[in-house]
Length: 126
Image (cartoon, rainbow, N blue to C red; front, side, top):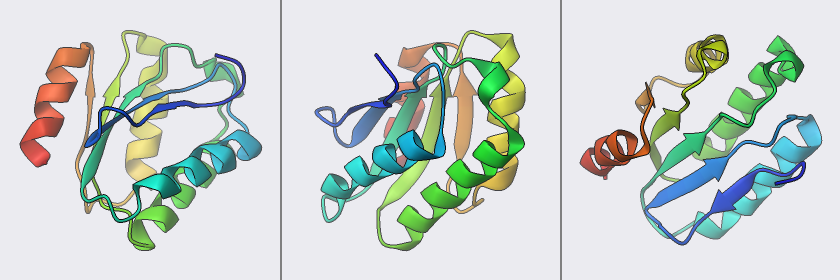
């Protein structure tokens, strides 16, 4: 996968996102810039896979930066209605929880162990 977020738009209105091993401000910016193609396409939900993420590199500063950057995109008019996170790794739970605290409560977020369950939940929001 490399050092970029893998963003799959072909399943819109469910957008699949695979995190890279390492998260940086640069790859967060690149990731969110690719979301601009969704502007004007209506409501969508994200189904995010975290299992490739190396937890030791995700600092509180990066969590805050990611959350603030997503919030800025939503405030600018992207119609993100919900966030489903899929992970089977217990070590990622603090990252998921931390992001949940930093993001807006205006849209729901839930963590799942299985993709099918996450997708079904997102479809109820669309």
